Amino acid sequence: MLFNVAVRGIVRVSTNFVSFVRERGIGLALVVLFMYLVSLMQEAVSYTLVLGRLNIRVWHDFGFFAEVGTSVRSALVLLLTVLWLLGRKRVLFRAIVIANTLLTAALLVQAGFLMGVLAGLSSHAVSELITDVALMAAANILIFSIWYWIIDPPGVIADEPDPRPWAFLFPQRSDNLPGYETWAPHYFDYLFVAFTTSFAFSPTDTAPLSRAAKALMLLQSTISVVTLTGIASSAINILAGA
Image (tube, rainbow, N blue to C red; front, top):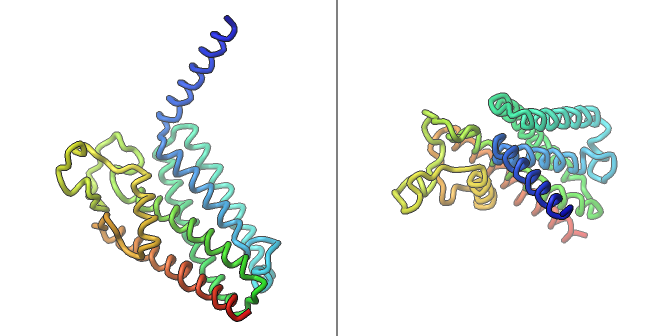
């Protein structure tokens, strides 16, 4: 008897939780979660930490700004979470645009600083450098997947018609494929676009249509070239010299 009551209670709570998440948007929940992960990744880059060898030439002059960036990112992630819980989708969308702009700026600053300290690195700092490359590459994918999702309709509120022209030409949009007549992209589709763009340095199966999409892909590919080829190859050279 008690077991049946407990099971019914668990099922009821699970059903209410699923309904709660669906009403507020599973895609929005993923975006907020990934922005939190990006914030953690940017915090873990060596030059922003008190520990780590890469900060020796940077922390003395720029430590204050790194601490301010930490506080701003934490406040924004908390704000995004609260807005999602309250179901304020339109306000949340504007907050996501602002937060992702700051995360993008931080990524560009981090890439610039890492390139700037490469000349003075020794073989002892290579492990930190390789870790930074991996963190920046992952952050690059997540940040631009959010940008692609932002600029391409249907965007945040998928159940409402959006008169804006497409920013991306997905294969499912170009032909009348059986079973895809009512297909619309979701956040995971933009995550796939960002992932392939980051490693191919160019569009793959999805073509950019708008100038905004082309500009964002150009910027993402540039960051990928810097992190995956420039910084990684420099680390390999340091190891080879050691």
